Length: 248
Length: 265
Image (cartoon, rainbow over all chains, first blue to last red; front, side, top):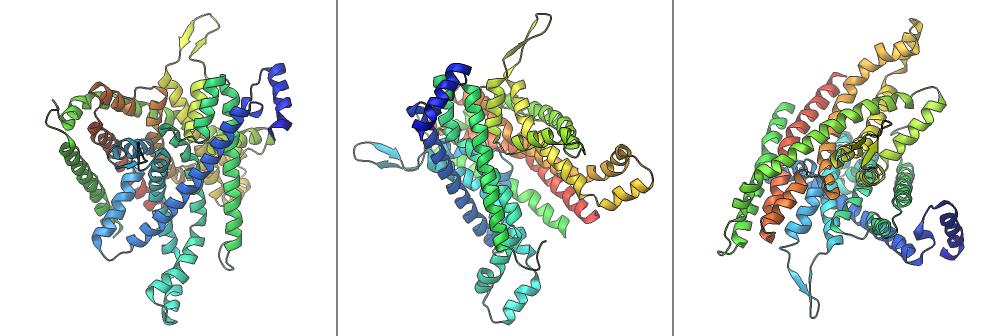
């Protein structure tokens, strides 16, 4: 791949001064690929964690125990109303300092690395939005549908899993898409704690090769393409799950 | 009923935040050894004015960025609904570019690509302080979103309004100013406030680029006080509490407005 495009970008650099170093320099090429890979991994992990938190939180909000409901409400308010970057630093430096170290055979490593903390911090941040999104989806399920399921002899748990959840998921899909896209963008915040995702690796390249404008273009293109892909995936999911009688 | 739940919501979250703060402070105190001259909490109290000074800059940046974003965003929104494709297409492009890129990337772009000083035609040189550039960097994504909010609000006005205005011989410009916009403003206020809150929560990112706002000052204070690890939790928690106290009433008020407008329409 690099062999094919390298001559073109080398000529481009020589003739116009536009230095897209990752497209002809093997070292920078590897940094770019690795950055993209880590970024995609990070985004998938963050989205997965935030979805799990969203479902659990939405379930806990319907709990009969008042303290549980309070805890979920407080969690939502705290994480939505404080700066995500401070949350990330708090998790990584504050909690990271008191997590136990693991013996790696001679040297010690923190149990959770910067990647892990980025997933945890941004995942919890995104989860606080997902709880509300799932809750509104569950509330949108018509009461008559649930009653019909009750009449058919479903238990409460069965109703939730087989009736409420599939419908709620469809209802909240548009809002969920928005939050997933916003989380994918927020993943760039992991730069702050030196997770080698795309923003971090490209900033490494531009401080080595002093080609900030070119790398900035690359970064914008990366995120716009990424968002377009996620939006496409989600809208095809939406179409596949569409129910007759709901929506257009 | 709604007011009742709202009131309950109003006090329980801050209460829990306070409880967590106290718990972690106790944890921080328990960690510390007796040899330390000043406790972590005592150090925090000494540095609070310095951090608050930084927070003032966060506030200034968020207000200026929001003002800039509102003016440019509304203009961009109008360009987006223009019937002229030459005006509409660039506006759509700009909106999509800034809506779909992360805050951090836009901030980097402004910080690194805008020169730190500009030369006026007369030969005078003007230095652009970092925080001004950061303000512009924060304004751009909000601008794009406000543009989109305006477009959405105009689209949500029933087409009957346009048609009846036309039958009353209003021009397009008059229809927009006297009929469509007054109805849009109401719909735009809650999302506009949400974006202000989000913008304020993003301003600490300026610390990455060396602006001396609340986060930068907190980190500087921890360094200056001896960079002991037990500072980290109380200092960062204090910073989170600071933002929480500022933003939480705002988001409660926004939700109340949203509910009132939803009930009204």
